[in-house]
Image (cartoon, rainbow over all chains, first blue to last red):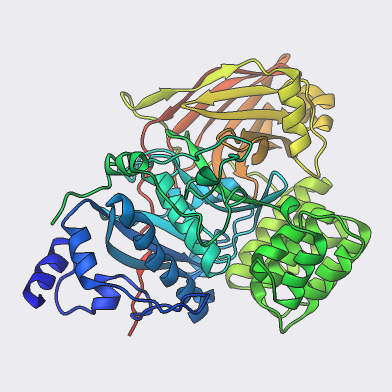
Length: 247
Length: 330
């Protein structure tokens, strides 16, 4: 298993001595995050190895206003990473290398606190990680009113892999408490890799549709449980340019 | 300014799905279905009698999370009533930088001439507070009629290269859309007449004159100030318009004038110059070269009533963006 693990780590670009939870699973705190309901959190090396042998994507998580991030904030991000793998697993989309990046409050120049959708786009255009991972920005103080509610995250639908392309070149997600952040994190990344909402201005009436990850959170039956994906959605994700073939 | 090459979508929760009582409990009592930041954000969408008092207290509380204090300032800025502005004035005493940035940005939206000096004092501070306050001074000054100078372009403009050009379509604006876009911009009186819309690769922008600027006609470009705004349509599973850019002019010598287009919060995106001659003004703008910016150029005329666009085109690729630093944890 050790040799196989090292080979797989190399395949996803993790080289040298590495921490299994930090570098291989991508937890910023290098340990498992707590589940907000107190349920025991477990990850399976065997499962992750299986996922990396199939279709998977790499991710860059970018903390914007990093000097304001507390351990609790990183816990929220790590729970989102934990849940992301569980949500994408049923449609056979793995999450491979996750690297963590920071933009200080001073460097962010106000974009740690976006109050308009336009500022989210400005953020993804002004910053990027030059690798083959999808950039997911987490502005520390996101507070964007919209249509009588609050925007929790925003992304291009079928975002570009060319990071110098025009428009939104990453996904964005605010910090809204572990369960909500985790749902929005997976939802926005779902957008980036090709998924649209499964409804229009009105929420779907059926429970199945409202339990889908791509229903907006305002339509979801529950923040925790409404994270399902269909096989068709899995196929759409598979077709995105960021998806790698198996190691 | 850029052109989206793909659709965009967001995740959203509605304030209408929660009662004021539930949100107040979650925001100030710390219990309930939603986290404190989300409860506070949603409470900001509600109207209720204790709103200014609730948010004013939160803003003034030095023991509170800075992020929540910033959100409180934002909500007070949206309320904009005299008591809300007084709460923001008290917020200028905040010791925390994040809270102070929230106050500066809110005062930029709803403050008055008397707040300019306080923001100028804040703008002298180093770091993020000073930078946020400086931008707020610019936005507020333009709003209250004492805008700062618009300098001529300092660096070479960023124009699209041959073979890398995407056309920008100028389209007629239905009156209903102009009214909707004008109504979406708070704190400014915008004219529906003279609105001009731009479409490029799925992105929809609309320029609207300020009512005062349009009344002045050509004289508007002979006076320093904000002449209008560009709004952007949110079309993918979201409705309505959002203010995106501000357009400022400043007269120069011999009938010339400088033009600056900034984001809503004051970041320069386009610069250029114009000239007033006979019964019309001509102008030419190009993108400001910065990380992630899109090459763009716009050229046209203004006859005192309407902008005429003779050429508008953008590049297909952005300038390289900045790289963040890697997080190193033990």
